[in-house]
Every structure is written in structure tokens, then in C-alpha cells.
Image: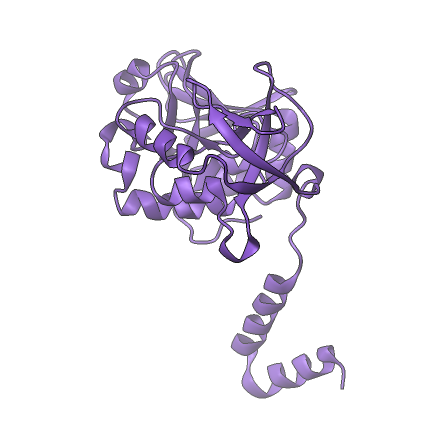
Length: 273
């Protein structure tokens, strides 16, 4: 008996609820399609030290940063995060990431301790401890979307930076507080009032006064990716979301989003992939 025949018989006998459960289970077993930058071969290396800015110096001579996260920028959280990394100096590790450098000559990489039996993903460890904030920035791909759920747990438990009001999400309607944080990395939560789709960009508007209110700016290619994932106009208009990025002064305040995962819907437990 084939799998499809068995599924049909179970649905007929036990009702549509079970069939829906089977469909969910099958969907969960389908492989997740990850971008090419996330599938590269891992190579062995060690952490030699850290720069004063907190960048990683590998034994191979490469300068690196952990992809998908941002270290805190204020004491004492910054010192705690750096201490966490320093404790791993000279440990054997697997390094994975594209062979590209940013303007500071750093590669954006994923690092896991070895041996495999006690493997620890460093970005995951920092986020779980509340010592880093999820931030894909302008990277080509966000390879660890599970970090968002780990961050949410750390935030609920008020671990590390999440015990500090500075790092907690800002209200999109509090214009004065937002203006005070221009130039900083922030999390902003609010309800989208309108969406303006233009030829090159899409604008998510959170107020009626364009010269004062908060806006999210999304390039055309990113908006298409979001729409393909079920996060287009109909899915977002009127919904509460959380966005993250560097707050800029632009007809009020704004955040530019180039990685779709940097926008999260807040009202649904389910977020389309």
C-alpha cells in the first residue's frame, strides 16, 4: 500500500482533523531550502584572539565576525559578551561561511566548537545567554532563523541585555524616543497603518504624519522575497510586527530591511517561510 493510499484511508476513517495533522507532519519533514551561502563546507581553525572592537582573529590569519548576530554596544553587556568569546580562545572549531570580506576585511562566518560530541554554535550560545542580539544586517543570507526564537526566550527570561531597558523593543508610535535613538541598532514594534508599493522600494508606514512617524523601507528584491513567503501586502497591512535594524533619520525615523527575517509578525504563532 502506498503512502498516499494509506493517508487517504486514514482521512476517510478518522476525519479531516487527522488528515490535516498528517499534512503538517509531512510538511515538517520536507528539507528546508537554504541559500547557497549557508551550505558551504566547514573548515577547521582556532580563535587566536579578539581585536579591541570585538572582531575575531583566527589562527589562519583571517579576521571574522559571527554571522547573524550583533554584540552589545554598552557596558557591562559588551564586556560579558567579549569575555564569553575570550573563554574560547585556542579551542578547535569549525568555520563556515562565504569567502567574502566586508570593508573592515572581516568574513561573516558561523563557528561551532569541536569535537562534534560537545559542539557549540557560538552565535546560538551568545543569543541564548542574552549576550547578543539577532541581526543579519546586510549579509547575503540569514542562515540561522532559529536564532529569533532563542532570542525571544532570552528576552522573556530577561537574560543579559534583555534586563536593560535600552535593548527592549521600542514603540513605533513614540516618535520622540525613536529620534533619541537615531544611529543605533533597535527593535521596533507597532501596527502597520499603510503600505506604499513603489517601483524600487516598498514603504511600511506606522502613522499618518510622514514627516514625524516611523517607516520601514524595503528594496524591491527583498519585498519580492517577502511576498513569495506569504508576507506581502495582504499579510502585513494592519498587522503588528517587530522590525530590527539601524534607526535612521528619514522623514521622521526609518529602518531599512534587506533580509526578510528581520521583520516578524507578532499576532500569529505561525510565520510563513
